[in-house]
Image (cartoon, rainbow, N blue to C red; front, side):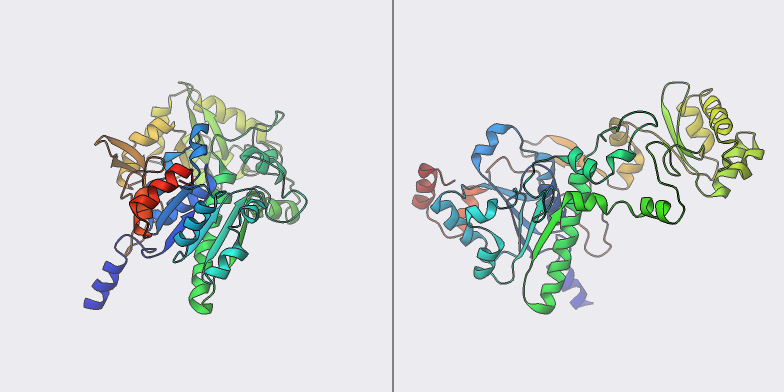
Length: 391
């Protein structure tokens, strides 16, 4: 029992307590990755050049639980500070275009010669190799090239760019976390770190196993707004309600669909779930039926029916939904001025070593002086770095 208590204290901030991450990335994919690592106890030091501040792209909602410092890696002093900083680091994360870290002299080959155990993760749009490696891009471009965007939107209309950045967050951020954790696990066995190449476009292609199955095994090449799981059938689509809100129905299994049909007074539609000859008839009926009542009515009525449905909520409604408060997915966080605001919680819930939202985001470069002092630099050194523009 005493040993278990001691182990828990060693991991008191989460499963990654004791892991040091130096994050050179910016914007969303890399910082989202390092936020997950920080939420689960890793010490994350984000490094940015102060020139980026003027661009207004400092996304502080993914910088909680981290320290933030400024460093000019193009300067010799800045580079020297960087190598002192990563001497005992476990992970380096970067999100530049391929080739940039080599030009800066902070690439994996150079770093690993000084720190054999380093896990070095690069997140880019198209990967470190291949014909597209040097192309610029954003989330919509990665979704487009991977074939995902072609499947999003209404039948007969153009592709709809999602309001959430799937390629950045899931493709870049989450896959980078997976790669880093696997590399850290491998390091326990080999004693060596390794290089991780995360392409957001690769990751979006990897989102398509069901599409591949439907194409190869069922002979159903999915179309935009016209596939098994995208509006073709009445059992898996959205319906507009009387008050111009929407409800999502996902009654894919027949027993769920039959229960919905029973509730709607049309039990005869249950066996006709995928009947092509009656498909439009069933869709038209369900559209009319859901349009007769408000979303509040349907939410109350269907709460008593064991079928698959959900109200289409706005983000404001999510922030005030008691369910997400209970699940600690919407939590209160006090910022450094003492003001309490709502923020998004930690989705991966571990029983023994839970992550958490411990500290608010640093201001840009807020921890620079403290980190430099920790590295052994004097006040005179720090002033000189500032005067020379290295920090």
